[in-house]
Image 1: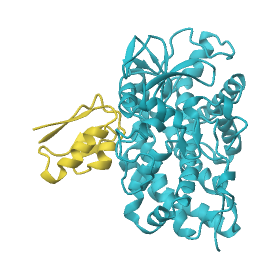
Image 2: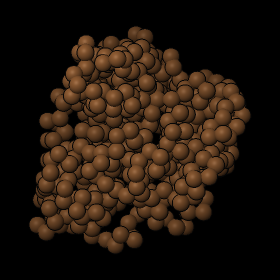
Image 3: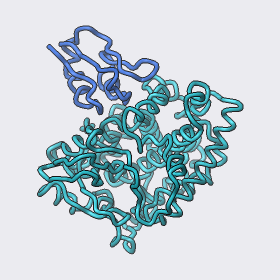
Image 4: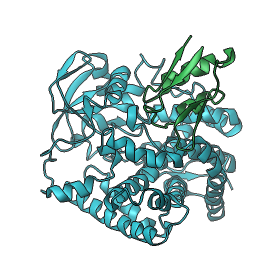
Length: 63
Length: 404
């Protein structure tokens, strides 16, 4: 499973970092950065949560 | 409760203490969307279901924050196009993408999670100072005046670069300006006064910029932004920074006092704090409605047709208490954490200051309850004064006591 983030759509709410900081971070401007190539199994639920919480629908996951 | 004013209160603002009016639930359980009257006597479409609220707030193309040319609020003094443009400049909540995103991105570096962690020790210090002052003055006290208002107010002043000594003036302005029972002409006058005050701070920052947000804006965006934009942005941050968290701290403390077992959990268990703050945000939903949207085209919400050019109000308290979103929505349950609540809104206008608000609450609630483990109401619950007509729900005051 991989996480994809659209940095143009991101509105820098930081919700993804709040629920899955092993996978998502913010750069100095607050815009989302995906930290890992493959999502570790034990982070999968957190990442799904982040996708659901993202206010601007900037995140998705692909298998 | 403010019973005498209740009859004119718009439907979306009606509450019984902590709970949204049952009328909202009735709409949510039947048509989902209904026309209602706002505080200006205009007909608006009221959206009540969780998924519909989210859908409206996600769709900035069909539900616009901007106002079409010629849009005037009934009773508002007529302004020239120039005056209107100046009054609107920099107000993120009145803009749509891409203009909105340009301004928002100037500010977001100041509100990253990492930035908040650096700010945390200072917030702890501010909270402790206010608790020390309460302790030395002794009980009883008005918790709004001694704790809930000054903590976020001082924090946003320091962040922005606004002299805290000026607080009497800007707090008085913002409380009247956001009170929907204040005549519109007076509200617009207060807005002008606020802008004039902010102009003086922008002028000062242009001469000599500090390490605060105003200084950063002038230093990094001073050339591309007009003074009107800087004033609008800074004014919004000042207003939003102390009128929101302060109401959550006051109302949230009252909610915990009414749920003693949950209060004890927040006091004793550090792991309970994060989820408790989220659930309090959901359950209290202090912002009655997101900034009204205007339909740019004919749309359908919950099967209800809404023509173009209509005002749409989304009820955040109703969406947050939709059983299709969360089980037993009427119950305050601080253990569940309520992920996905709409208290900070949704879509591109999602609260910019959410990380700051969360941090302030995560520090302030447990610190208060640990300092005063016997904290109790010093007035009858029925006598507590809620701020019904305010754009943001809260308390006028909260008399509390403790055993020294």
